[in-house]
Length: 495
Image (cartoon, rainbow, N blue to C red; front, side):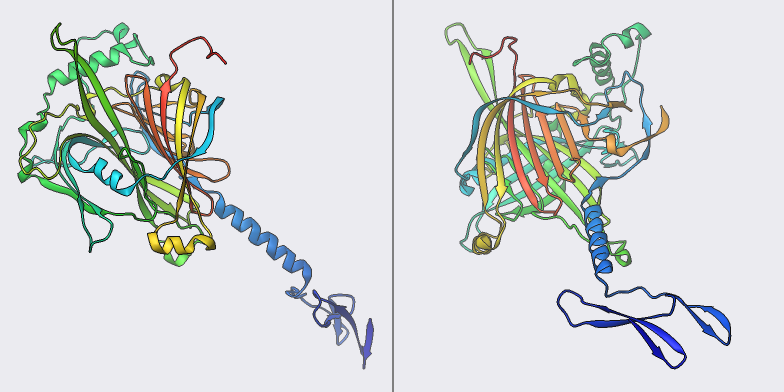
């Protein structure tokens, strides 16, 4: 509508905004021009902050920003040292796992009893430990020795026992002492071996050349046994108390996954750039080993069982409001139960576990192929209807399900054997192939779901897997504990 006021002319636009009262918007004649003393003057058009178009544009922009925040990813390129291709130190991308047959659909199972779990983890544990690079999977030093040398292996002695807290549910108290040793790491001397011997067996599941080299190396550098150290005078590595805390998912055999129930995801505050939340994710898999040995012809065979467990701790930093993650440390410990915690006298049971520097690394070919998988999953329940239960227990309730399938695992893409400097894309680094049949991986899939997992493979063809998964909202989505048995038969199962 045109309005004439004196010698000036205005256009008046009436706009109705979502049922509110009409508002008048004034603009100069011809949209953006007016005349002053016969001179043409340009007038700057103001953004119409009240218009429907701007509200819609703002909503779209906010949606894109939220989508960008939800795209969680790992740090990009890093300059790393790359080893020769006859090395066993390797990282790779993820291994695709496809379901071939569902043997048993998901069924609910009873939540494990806390007292049973406490009993399973309690006792005296002897073990070995090491720390590995989250970028190259190399063994990293634990601390400096008295001669200013790096030490790469450690022995641990853990005392885990139940303690009462004001007459409430018992808690688990853990005290770990340790000694560090081995200034040589995984450095292996290549003595008296020709080039043809080096090439022989390269990239096989159990490379004969590599195995020979590590045996020869271990003869050169003798590492003292566990029993030669006095742990009563050793340093304390860690002491903590664990209860039914939020984010702890446990199983009756003593396996558990421990970490935050929610990680921070949101708008990044640049004024607090120095504050990046860092969390530890501890995952433990238990294994009951059974070995057979001939005692005498009259007695047949003697069965001797031992309880071992693998404990892996990922330390992860969440940057830019959770949009970027950086793995700071990967610590691996293998421990053996040697006796109950209430016996004061030290156990005389010898440690049947070698330090990680003396053990061969697992190869992708050992995990590729068909597997029979038994999986138990724990899913937390969120919502207002369970707020009361959360206040009572201190953590969200979990629903436990189990299922059994036949799966096939494919070889990973982009394996990297880590000497010259080169740039490695961290987006391609998912799995660390470590000594002792251990795999550790942190994976972010296409929809932004974060998965922190560990695997423990034994020569008997059993692979124990624990995975912890977070959604794009930062909340714990699921914990999966899987027992995978390698399918060694060639013919298909009868249906």
